[in-house]
Image 1: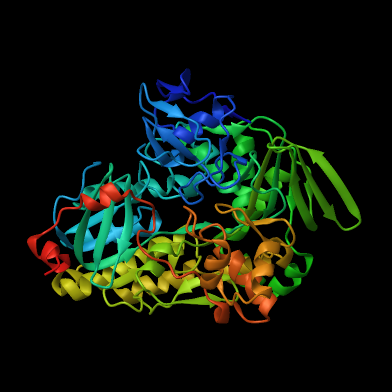
Image 2: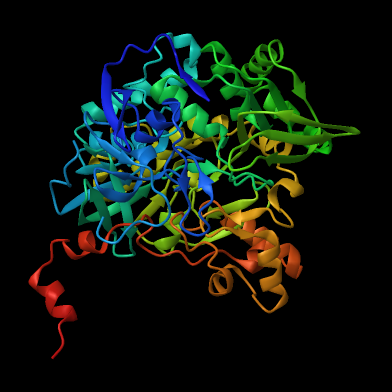
Length: 98
Length: 472
């Protein structure tokens, strides 16, 4: 769906998506890193379980909700990646306590 | 940079570090006022200058001169002495000018003598069939990824809609080596005629030459279909095709990515939750705050600058930011005000910068069928409520957006109406034969962005705060 520009010389950052390592770049948001990873990163909505991907990428639509380092319902488009970050694709509602 | 505010109170708190917020914070701090600038993103710049201090796009011509124009203002704010906090989410503001802000999972309240809201704009909802499918995004979303991460579309891509941003995005994608298969232009043919009376002002504005050059650049490389009157996305759990109608032509195109755009509208959530009066704008088809010439709202001490005050674009936003801050400076530290540009000078440059806006607003007024959906088309993305669901609720007595919450939960999901509010208002107005002003909008309340109960409970409290709620 997306590819990186050749002129991007930012440093690599490694994050994990449901346990699998992917390469991101310093300054990527979690959502951008997921979208360019080529993996199936569709979440499932809390209401019907319909598959979704980020829509607005600017913090207003909440279709990028994702579990980051064990905390659910984070807006992936507002959180920059960090080395070793653990991402879980959220299927349905946030679980109580995480 | 990502810690809570250093002080309990400031002369001026500015919310949003886009063009208006940067200008306001710089003006206030340069006049010696203690100034706090709060912004939700990782870096300053707002949407139009997003990632201006960190973009991996180094070939400057690809983003354009209007983008790099923001760098000077970011420098000015950094040198001004304003306290700047990025990744700070403002979730509350009230008539006592108390600002609730969340940074890194902890919240605090800060007081202010003046608050300047520069929360900008968001893209107008574009509720067509299939707009919730993975693979459908806004044009702004693609532009955000392009600026901040140097990402461009590389599969079959269609851009649909209208307005200046659509052409700018298309040009930027092509310059960075991205792929666009087709542009579907939804501008209504009759709008060209309606906009004609405003054409002279537009043609003598800086927008004209820039816009024309950009459209030419894109048209040389991408087939453009004009006069599109129907649009639908389809696929099974993933976007697979886009169908459109233009005149007698109907076509279905296989596609991987669909980027939608039909203009931007003020981001009203924080202002409305503070209780600031808004009115329906019949030209821009959105809610705009009621403001005086200095940007002051119906609540004493709160001003709004930038696109949140009504869409005007980046150049206008900068001037409105200067005006709102300058007015604050005149009230709070009149001696300092005498040293900088007068309000009269600023207002003269504002009317100059606003030249051509009426033409753009009229030409790019989105068509009714793309604002007011029907049938199974989803209106509320969060709660997955369709147009038919809403019309059914109206038929059994729902009178406006607030009552509709009790019937269908529209606007009660995490986005708090940002992606459905305008659609719900217009849809209910049409169904009940009322004006949008009569139908009204959701009653918005803090927190305007979700925070956890644990975070709320951990907010620092004084003895008086505790006593106020203790029984007996």
